[in-house]
Image 1: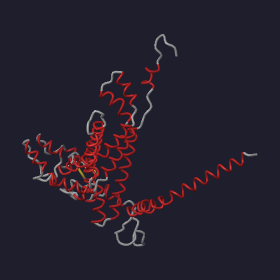
Image 2 (image 1 turned 135 degrees about the vertical axis):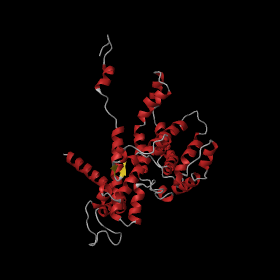
Image 3 (image 1 turned 90 degrees about the vertical axis):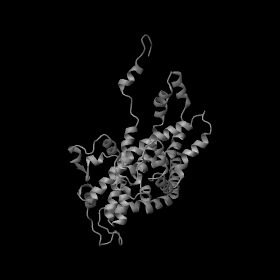
Image 4 (image 1 turned 120 degrees about the vertical axis):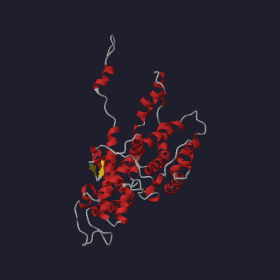
Length: 363
């Protein structure tokens, strides 16, 4: 006879906990809805409309244009497509170089400062992390001085007999410059005659410009310290028993790191790569403060192009469309690297030597 009473009492307790949970989370849900969800939905509507930035985007004077804004960017054949292709090419090279370099450098620094035999580890951790807490605008201004034609970087290069470039005023691609040193000035017809997003394949393979290379170095310099802390926290939580077992089995330092330590860092590696991808595809403030897309649009990025298209050219629909295309790109690469780093079951073929019973043994 007491079972129904207990069941109703438990259900009432759970109902009270659920109500309390919703009560405590309601303010944050309201804030997220007002300042995140609603603005995103409004921007999505703007990307399908011809809103000119005046009045409400939901007024009767605003018309639904469908995918015209997206078509102009992805296949319109005009300046909008060419600018978007240029921005995408610049940012693709930026991501391709920044994300792997900053990940490897941050992991190397974490392993270095996590060693027990290193003296002054606290000082080195602070020194490596300090650029990450400095304002990106201040770092950009400093970089403009360091990489000017008469800056400290070119002075150092002159000591070893290298005539440094005029970094932030040089639009030439790094790979094209390397090929030019070997006498290759133009590409084959298959590359120069075919285009994607208004840019020839030969220009897609130009590599980052000299100006963008300076921004790549700045990104690695300012972000490696943050990811170093994430790797340090992961390294300190690893079990030492597995490493000791590998040492007893005769594994050297590199084998222990590659076969034992690195696989255990898979969750942290996923986090670092995800944050690195998001940050690299959304680079804006350095471009806005530094070159504003110049020289020759070789530092133009989709994030800055979205701002320029909407706020400067008053093409709010195209600006919002660029932002959502960038959102799709970020989601795609995040899911791809999640699939790439996912743990997979060991195949039966690889497990067979461990499952076989030694001769003369018993199961």
